[in-house]
Image (cartoon, rainbow over all chains, first blue to last red; front, side, top):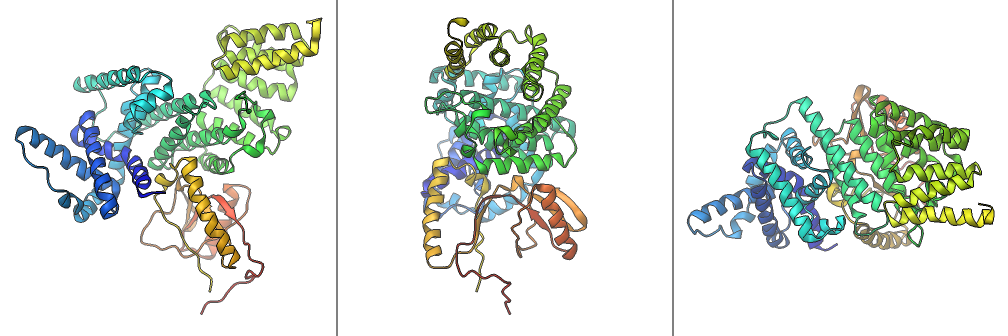
Amino acid sequence: MTDLAWIHGALTAARPQAVGALLRYFRDMDRAEEAFQDACLRALKNWPEKGPPRDPTAWLILVGRNAALDGVRKQSRTTQLPPDEEISDLEDAESQLAERLDGSHYRDDVLRLLFICCHPDLPATQQIALALRIVSGLTVTQIARAFLVSEAAMEQRITRAKARIAQRNKEGADVPFEAPGPVERAERVAAVAAMIYLLFNEGYSAGNDSQRAPLCDEAIRLARLLLRLFQTEPEIMGLTGLMLLQQSRLAARFDANGEVILLDDQDRSLWDPKLISEGLALVDKAIRHNRPGPYQVQAAIAATHSRAATAAETDWAGIDGLYLALERMQPSPVITLNRAVAVAKLHGPAAALEMIEPLEQALSGYFHYFGARGAFLLQLGRNKEARTAFDRAIALANTPAEAAHIRRHLDRLMKEAGEKV
Amino acid sequence: MLYTLLCYNKEDVVWSWSKEEDDAVMNRLATVHEKLVKEGKLGPSLRLLPTTAATTLRGGGIVIDGPFAETKEQLLGFYVIDVENLDAALAVAKELSAANPTSVYEIRPIALYVPEARPNAPTQMIKVY
């Protein structure tokens, strides 16, 4: 790895804390971002020559703050910026500042920055786009590519989201800069967790699309960041574990033609053992707290799959029980549908079909409902009805890979049944 | 004389490496490992998962989420154990802690474990005077 790559990594890693601190200082997002940008430029110039500072984040905050203040002075009268010699000699100031960046400040700075992005006024896609821009530091071009929209459209979307937040800020209705109380902090953590999971799903549902898949990695990076800030929160352990375990199957989820391979049929040797170990460790840690929550239960379901050496060895009774627990925590037809898959394995397709029949109205626009319904009917030999269900599924498919997957079912059905259907 | 080499870095940076960057580093290390194996110098080696996956056991059986974070103590030794899950690992740590109550034990899962490759590896405790 070149020095430049190292510096780039260090700047990205420092970004949430540095921008968060600069935001607290300036109380203005644009100024905070500009100040950080300025500090990064100086780092790129200074660090290769003088070596990276002991505490890159403290260096960036200090230099960013000074640069922004110089900028203000420069606007009023044209004075020279201080020579780079001076700002590189920050050892003392830097260690003092590092001491002042005590745990709680740091924690609330980063949390505030993340939380600003998940304002309930903003639609989900804007929340994610904003977080990728502000917290992750992705360029508008990169984000536009990930969302499959034009750069101009994404630029406009982010500008609009920022304007909305700035407006709310001016009205004083928004994210205060004082340290939040415990209830408020917990609410912020929950909102941020939801945004991170949205980000993950944005990448996960894109599947093997190489432009969008990095969204999953970024979501995991943000979750690890949040977990470092809230080391004892079992739901954050659960969320991080859940995403790691889902991401561990990436290489096995699609065949060479980009078509979906279901969990049962995946080559488990392609699952990433490193991600699985980390995910399982987090699930274990979370369970010890005895404070179950939706992310933990979903992570436990993912962990049950990860622990099965073959699909046949899956503990479906355990999964059924976990879905039941999840259903009670947040009743939803989608969760019932998922549980039906476990029920089909345990008690056969007839029981599963009976279970999902009442959901048809609620899930009439949901691809997976008709996919599962078709599969159960197929197992029961009710091929004609299965075809109808699969046809509806194809019409509702979100991606070409989903549609292709169902079409394969249909093809097989036609071949097997011949003219009988 | 046996030595351990302890590798330090910024984990938020390292665990943000892309797969390509990570592979590149691991491949370069693998070349060094191979050479060391040939020279009969390399014992077991391992890569740890991030500290977010760690749990810490303090004296008196107090379990804390996260890594051992004090800077006043120094790393004095480590074990590699093979157990079912975190609870089992904690049970082992508790036995060790009972025997050595002033020490703190951080339980950190392992990302990659490369076992001993030397045919004439030491099989018993080496006494260092």
